[in-house]
Image 1 (cartoon, rainbow, N blue to C red):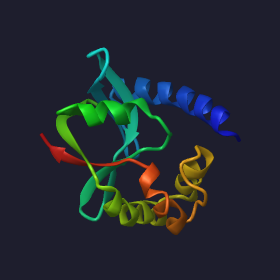
Image 2 (cartoon, helix red, strand yellow):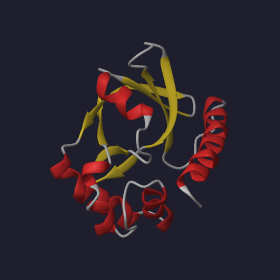
Image 3 (spheres, rainbow, N blue to C red):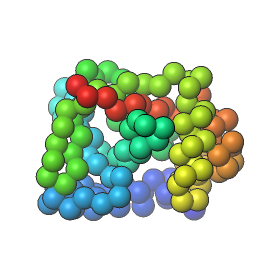
Length: 147
């Protein structure tokens, strides 16, 4: 599947995920990230996987030019919602030199489709843990911290 088709399919699935989460149905690592738009100032909501790794909680960019990444970089706080529970958090961007080990661990401990997604979207060239870690300069990683 090419990257454009993959993005269209993902956008359709994301609408379903948002609808289920807003009805209080939580599953897997998925949460709703609500962040103020950097240009409009209006709240924007995105379904995001919050992954627990190495004793912390992390969010990984899955698409190039993801709007939530630019908005998160500009925001002081965000809201994370899982089912009917919401919490305010800070997203702290992990420096590039620290991302490789987290990306390697994410791919190593996740289904194969996680590594494949980074390749399909053009962020990485190989879906292996080392292949994804090598793309650390192209994949934003945020640590979730209490606000």
